[in-house]
Image (cartoon, rainbow, N blue to C red; front, top):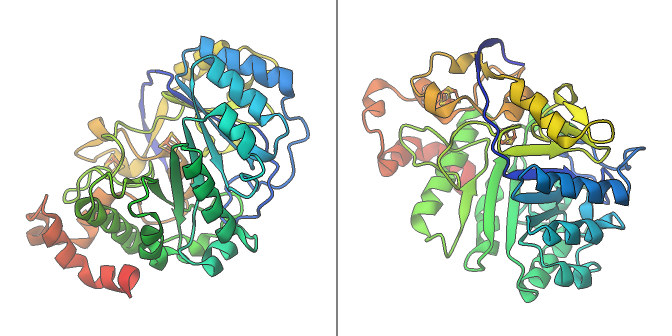
Length: 367
Ligand code: SF4
Ligand code: SF4
């Protein structure tokens, strides 16, 4: 963890619980943060899961995102999903898509508010290599078509690393004009993902430029593209790249992470030392009280930042994962290190920023 030199108080406002309903997975992605494969030995059973849905509703959560492992291979996934809908909470499902066609009948009945699929390459070779499953690219594209036929809102998540950075344009071409939301995030070295494949700060900045340029080029109807929590805020030059203005890491505030054995953390991206309790032995309400009384820690590099009061620090999960890296993966910090004072004075002008970065951009994204 980066050195901790400051603390800020927390205010809980429950919005979205992200729930790993099983750790079992039929894929073997090289970037899997939870090293999914086999089930946890003590995963919540159906009755415990249904009770937890009620608790989430009682605690005021507006939505639940089911994920894994691979959620659609848990036999009772649709029972849990239907219970979430019965309580009128929003339901989203994050899936690798491999088992989606087989589950399409249940998906049609459950009607999730959104299904998110992972697409990590613009070619079968790259996507299949990253996902560790031959034929995965084809199955993902077929799954997207099925979701479109079922009229289920669909989004795609791309986790960027040194292998697929150059395929962003190819992925874009697959998604353009299809009303598919596209979330881009970076791979960090947790779980199975090796440190050597993490993009460096120039690549990180170039990725942000890619998002900014394409957000400007295409309307959000043609390409609903956003940067995820780990990138896209408080640049001096680029607009906010996320869905909404950044108000600080939401782990344990509006976001909650639930492991398949009932362990609760502020966010699933955080390491196990952040587990706050287990729903088998405590009520969710009591665990949330405990979360409320904890203070959030700021990475040291943020302490003297001019916008720390608004930014409230970086994505905590990313900061932990990159704790051994010299670079701070923050656009504002990178700009200070890479641009000189004269360049800093062009703040707010995307075209000028692009011209300063065009060699990087050309080599990394276009070439
Ligand atoms: S240095 Fe920290 S507080 Fe400042 S913009 Fe970057 S992440 Fe936010
Ligand atoms: S740790 Fe990162 S992913 Fe999790 S809530 Fe915070 S910003 Fe979002």
